[in-house]
Image (tube, rainbow, N blue to C red; front, side, top):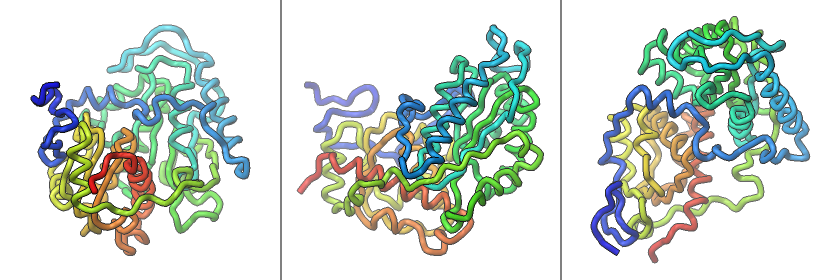
Length: 365
């Protein structure tokens, strides 16, 4: 086997020079942002049939049943013929009866994204006529294309799925609410998820009421589906492995093809120079992320950037092996009790799952 670097920039297993996220300066054209509005790799193969409801949580079974009916209804009254992706030119169709949107309300790890992606897959339309993205990705699309072009681009779709709808940024919430109003008028069906705030678990429909209030005039278009349950990412599983030593993490990076190796603090600095819309491209081709010297993040802005990176790594099923503090110590008590706490709890949950995935990677002794 040749020891020369592969064209992709990743070397063979014995390559002594792992990749570095800090060395990457990705450029993402606007058309890629549109093309990538599909369920992430982790959810490529999920379907309603692969969702395993907790027998102790009947709301999970009911949510599957309701979403299957919603997906089937999106095929009613549809006329044949492809609508243009960029533009309002589309074949007229009769809007199905009932709400034009569903909102999945629940805590962390109850399978909301699994169900949202299953809805995308089950909706009877070709992929080019369905869009799936996080709230952040949707606002990034508006930033890249402009508001009017985004409306023209998405108005030809049959379904728009928005994962992790953010309720903590009034400006972005008004922007997206206005966008959704235009899309509903164009006949686009909507589906969204958001996390119940940790301090509000058990308080009925707090998140649903909050969501419906924030989207104001759109509330009548949404049916809220409550999904109860515990975090499936940690249900019945052992605790995440404790942090490794710097030497073990470095050995893993050198022994794993396509692994990256970065020191945590310089990586946080690098994230500040890369727009969050590019974090997915930042991880292109990465098979494992190895981090040394993980420590509590110093401020809110840094923490929010780390949340976005954690989301993109989780979407792409990239294991994370790290030294330093455990991931549940990344965010201060003040952060975990503040307005962005739902994001931080989600990041802890996802990074813990990725740390568990990394346990099978080779480790130096």
